[in-house]
Length: 324
Image (cartoon, rainbow, N blue to C red; front, top):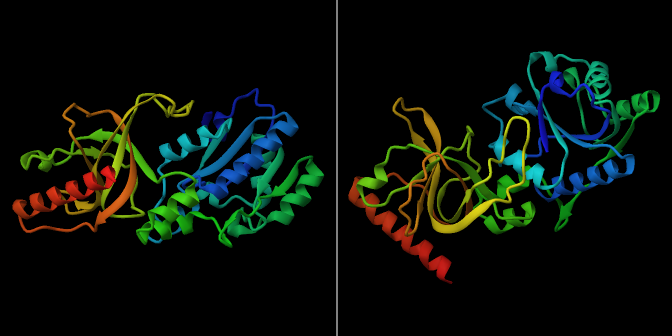
């Protein structure tokens, strides 16, 4: 899969595509149904598939303080899309220029001139253009005049309710990992490179790997029994994204995910993982952390002795979980 950042990076020999537009946060079962729909149309038209998205996401641009926590950072999202065989991801910067673009300009400059689109898949409630004046009906009308077809996304439901990123976030915040995993079609996970943290764990005999999350908000917090996997393939480059098929052995451990204060006192999302019976150097490597069971809520302790006792108990609970 190839990542294209900005219209100006679309290859000059690009000959058209079938495309869909969305955030694809978490790439849950509903998203996966759309991707299958997209691939089917790609085969029908004999054209590459394109997922178009925006950075930042529109809600983050208009109201950053009110925007929900992402289920996946950009790297994780690209990795998931690559695993479904998508040919291209077009990532456009959502800025004042794009926000001010009229619906007609959006269709002409992005869909027609940029992507040379043949078929578009979007929800029938999709809105675009300045002040959200563009809608599904405008796309259909312009498409019939300009030579591209428009198809609405099929609603994917479980237990009579639409599968959505909001629904997954609700499950995670309610400590319902099982339901979140069902909606995602896989265990919930986060990934990132290992960087240097405060190294407090070493002082109490429990070294931890500090996973750099690249996100501003967290969809969940607490202490969890986890599985950790090192990703050995350079999975996400600027121009090419590969499926994660080069993985090493899976480890078990315990992790704390939450918001810790920085030196300046600004909240900073943090994921620290202690891997059982492991002593190798992980700095600079990339880990995927799969959350298996919540042990307790995050807590501030009165001194290192109290912290050490809590961590010892967390590790025993996690070990018992993996033994059962």
